[in-house]
View 1: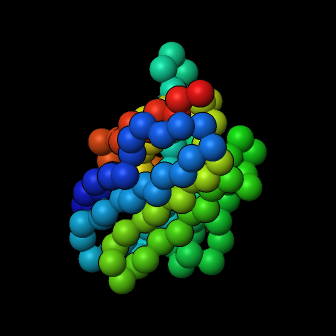
View 2: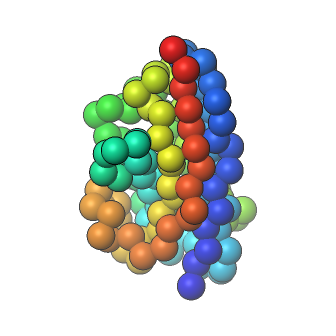
Length: 124
């Protein structure tokens, strides 16, 4: 069982930055691939970024590529998402997710555990 708690969301102006964190419970964090998904109002949840269990491989959706960086600290059981050059279209609830697979998948169906989400609002 893994429990995930996100933090770091908030209101920011376009062009600004935010750093999201996801604290995981349990001693097996390093075995899970991790990802950030996001869901905007009226839209389906979508994959934003993912990182393999070892941290050696990272993946980004085209919509965020070049503006965000995903990282993890397995010693601290924490996942991060550094978001720069934020746009109004980045406004969404951001969810941290853990997959029992060691590799990253973009489908939410591959993720076993989810956090409660943190709101990111980007004003124009």
